[in-house]
Length: 167
Image (tube, rainbow, N blue to C red; front, side):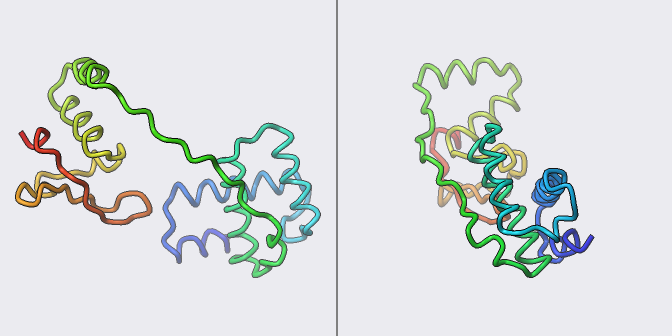
């Protein structure tokens, strides 16, 4: 409950809270006792357990983040997590569709609303949640920008509005 309260006080996203609790719960099952009794060696064994069971680097980093919050913030025992470092992820370039592929994707959406959403997402490089949250008032045709409110990390930002998209 204290961890939940700590996350609520910091206004963490509901999804983040759920995942952090999930990883602490999984660690508790692995440990077989209360996680507040864990040692540095227990955490090391758990990380090795996750690696040995094929946990992806992204999931491994999520587990480390959840446990780090639990030990650093909730228990004030950050020294236990000092040696648990996130796994570096390879930086990959996104797949860029050819003009023909993009046209076929848009043509596959038979509804104008869906075509518009796909066009905006692809042309402006927006996430699904950002497209869903767009309003007509977010379009600044003078400056050729889209105002994105509360995007990833609950941050506001501007995205370029391609002239063709404005049409």
